Length: 182
Image 1 (cartoon, rainbow, N blue to C red):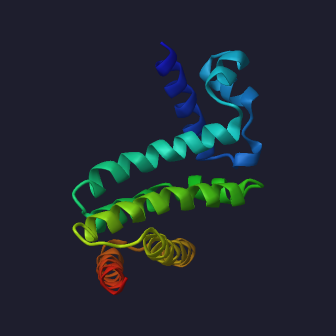
Image 2 (image 1 turned 180 degrees about the vertical axis):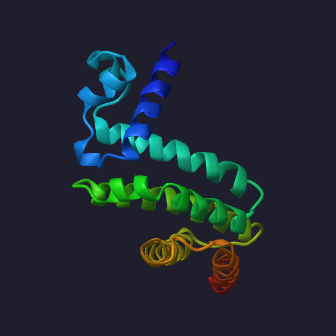
Image 3 (image 1 turned 45 degrees about the horizontal axis):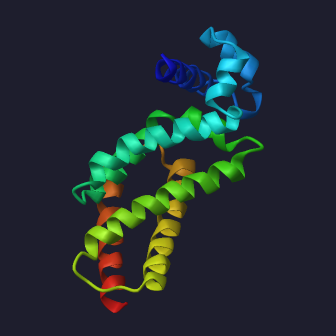
């Protein structure tokens, strides 16, 4: 029952963030929508921002785990781009809030994990020291972050597949070369 209740709260938040900016979503509104008590909400989440992070983490893990388990980086990027396209209003409501910097930091943590998966896949059998590993991962995370922000702002109504195909090749080639040079 407890996991069901937590999921129900997360679904109520997901519905609300589609139309309401993060700053205007309240615990009161969520519990009224969900039909649970405030105590029940606080049993599962510290506050609305903690709930937002949990929802984001779950959505990203649904994409990341299956796509990257076999090193299918292009598929991961394509799934991510399609999620951005399908959830444009939700993303705007998250990033146009007073918590936008915290959301950005959280997203960077998730993307760093994904870059780590790609690095480990491409570096299998090679010796790379931890300092170089972190540098390579961070460089490529920044490249993806910048590309995604620009694409979201100016091109998110276009089919992402051709861009993702090229970006995937550039990133993998660049990371392979960086691993070889490390």
